[in-house]
Image (tube, rainbow, N blue to C red):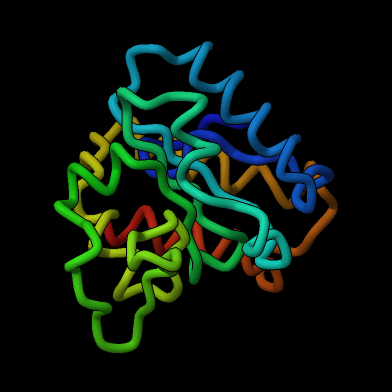
Length: 168
């Protein structure tokens, strides 16, 4: 787990990106080690797991704090019920233009969000970080390519993280 900003603090390990069990364990450990964080925000799951995830899995870890986990591209997100409650999302919420809220057979949101317009319905409620949070985020980003032997100019994650920090 890598801490680098209030936006994406619970960094899911790349080697577990296809295992729902490993992702849930990572979130469980992060929640346990960071009980004072008002939101649990993570990144790096792969879209192939979408058929196997839902809000109840995250609710089982923490139901009293909102959780939002972005996929590696930031075009999809997985949230718990608390995040939906804070955002006022329910079965009557319409899909935003160019976004999609996955729903179960009864029309209830499953906790899986597709594309930024849908994700922003929840993400806009995440508290903004302060200057130190953003400094730590940039420091983490700058150090990642060296650790993982990647070139920053070709690293989609670096650009996603910079965009996220800049937007907040």
